[in-house]
Image 1 (cartoon, one colour):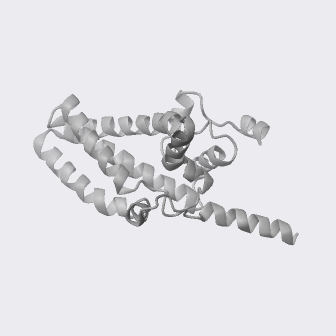
Image 2: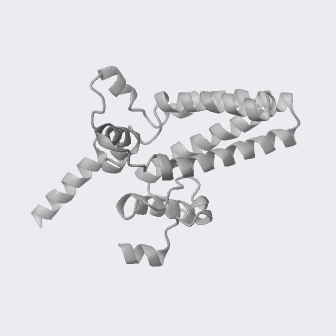
Image 3: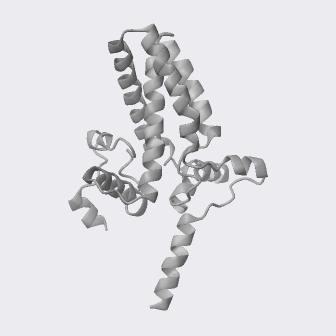
Length: 216
């Protein structure tokens, strides 16, 4: 019994561990981030974008653009998680890239400092999104689309941290946590929508109670 307790304790410590990823101390420090940092960075940006959007366009256009941008984010979240994060790159360099992108999270899923995107990753993503939305939707409507995209990103980050470090009390929260933990501990080839699990149902990668029991 004591050996089982020690084994569970060791496993729990490994899940919460925050391993060093880079030899460079500064780069390694930048790979970790407190869950609240994205809120401090992006909420003021969102407030400015929303205010500017309502000045530059009718409310209906602003709301429509935000919904479009949010939808775009959820699709990128789903397909990025499904194909990029879980792609097994060939060779030692490929294995290293996969480990840095997502493998480390599956080995240490409860690492509290690597559950939201570090600024080194989210910053370039948002700059690219800014350029693409402006190019595709114009400088005015593109603001609303960018707003929705950033909102989607923040919902994703906060949901991911919540799922790993909280005990949901609502049925929706329990459903989302169950689906994500099944992805981690039962079958990593299903359940890719972290904050938008409906895409798993659209693309037939959802967990079902019958299937999860069969694969448990």
